[in-house]
Image (cartoon, rainbow, N blue to C red):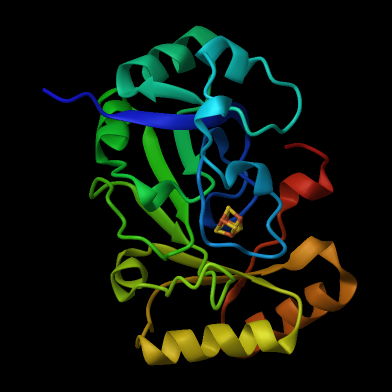
Length: 225
Ligand code: SF4
């Protein structure tokens, strides 16, 4: 039987600072690879998958700065590594990069069997392959340089939609996307980009007007990863 492996850029344990799970102790698993091309992306080091950057788990996990290095790990190796680290959180956040470029079902199953809950954070531009129980956060990256479209199937699967906003244009983009795909019941979170005052005010005004929710990236206010 073929073993599923994942290209891991980093693991870390912290408090989830965004969306419905804000405040939840979580183990983040960051996958390497993303072709979406958001100009303001704060994880550009995860974009390219270069074979020259493939390293051992130990080297990947001992990084103390953001680098393009990644380790190819099976589900069993990932589970064992999380145990070895002694992490206490029981919530897994699979992020990237764009984690939905690969089938995440085996990874979710591996954790869920061991009593963890799973969440995936995705741009909505790839088919989402996860377990039924997995919580899906779609942060739709609309009209980005890579030219990927937001998939209806991703919006249909979303348990929450989280959208970064800095200007009215971002609000309009989201409003048009929701109308086009007839999204009505999914909780919507607006997230001010870069904690800027104008962005925060705009997000607050828009949330109140539309009965949406505010996500303020609490980890950035309390100075944790
Ligand atoms: Fe960065 Fe995420 Fe956009 Fe990819 S989808 S470019 S990782 S913000």
